[in-house]
Image 1 (cartoon, rainbow, N blue to C red):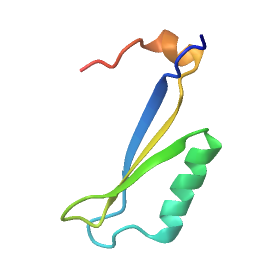
Image 2: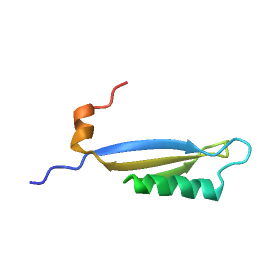
Image 3: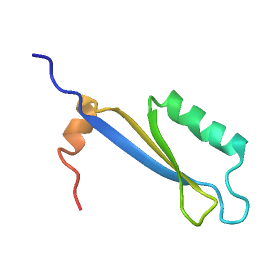
Length: 73
């Protein structure tokens, strides 16, 4: 039976309280993440804000697994 995929997640909030998120800034963030192997799983507008929260994931590598087994508080 194949091993179940384990994921590494990355979360970033973009935009500013005054001007919101510019299309060019969002595109640059998504392009940079794509080059690093991240798949975008959610883009969420933050309530009462002009910001967006971007969530990405990519499969854990063996190096990632050696660095940490489980999330810590």
